[in-house]
Image (cartoon, rainbow, N blue to C red; front, side, top):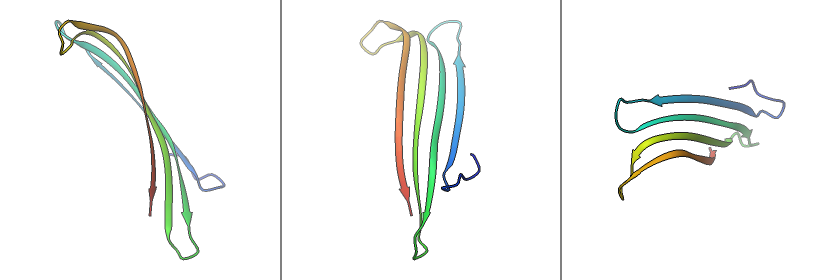
Length: 88
């Protein structure tokens, strides 16, 4: 997490890698990254609020994954999970 900027905002980020390899059966690799910002606010009455926005992104590479309907899947899948929060 960064030091506060002039407006009080702090940025943060984290990354993660995972590899699952087996002699037989499903294999996958995953890369994840989460990045976001937090912005605090103190009201004149002394209440402290913090707004936070973030997004997590995942990229998967899959091999020999058995599907529920039968058969197997090989390929890549991606997703993004945006989040917003306001705390008091």
